[in-house]
Amino acid sequence: MTRLERLIGIDAMIRSGRYPSVADFCQRFEVSERSIYNDLAYLRDRVNAPLDYSRQHGGYYYRDPTWVLPIIQVSEGELLSFLLSIELSRRYLGSVFAAPLRNLLSQLQHYQITIDPNDLLTHVTFQPGAVAPVDPELLNDVSVCIREQHPLEITYFTALRREYNDRVIEPYHLYLARGDLYVIAYDHLRHTFRQFALCRIKRWQVQYQRRFQRDPTFDAAAYLRHAFVSEVGDRPVTVAIAFDREQAPYIRERQWHSTQQIEELPDGGLILRFENGALGEIKRWVLGYGAHARVLAPPELVQMVAAELQRAAAQYT
Image 1 (cartoon, rainbow, N blue to C red):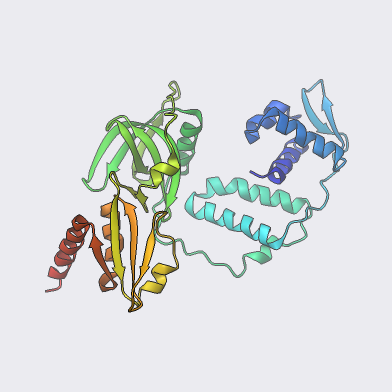
Image 2: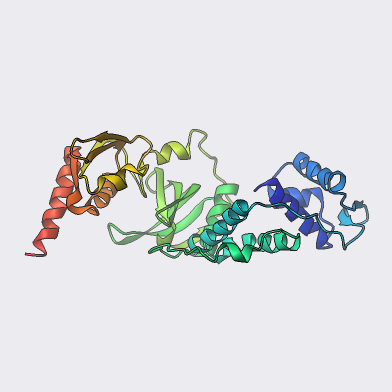
């Protein structure tokens, strides 16, 4: 959250007439008391807010309730980025998570923004693709578990084995891959870190009475370096895939993996190399390119793709 967003939020809390305290502000915005005192000083000294403290009510109020923040200078690019974040939140996280952003937008409009937000999305269309729905309450509970370190009991559907399992997980980190939400968590059933698709959690219960100790060595960025899209592999291997000249321009223009290297071929094709162990996900990705892609390494992936193509071809003969 930017300071501008926090100032608008502080202003809205004061304007509500509930006499919010510094502790209320700290809890709402998850910042230190020092940051809140700096924000209050900014409102009082820089924008001349009629801010005062009520000892009787133990919180802040405006002596003049008709006072409003001065005109906020927001560029078109800044506002467009904010509007896009609202739409992306609504489509991928659900209306529950988009609602606070929409509320902030309504507050911004109250503070005399010089650009009409309704004009900016007129020529923007979103096509999110096939996205699995996630219960907003589940997403909120997982977020609470990450922040407050509560274990989470879940009933999880494993698609590969087509079975349900009850387990307890310790959620560490949320990430979005191809429009689907996953949580990285320590799994008590397997005694290791694993990722779980939120859309496959069918039942859950937060263990509010318990707290877990986070592993200080866990690094979400390091964990996800072993991932390809949504699958995380165990032992990284060198993956090499040749793309013909027809597909090469589309491969060349994207960052597929942090370790990728591209070797240009004389005929206009290329070889994409990177280090990863998520061979199942890479197999599915390569198959999407049909005859335009050929796996060169590792041998295991070559065999996996060849076997899948043979099974697919057998359905058309």
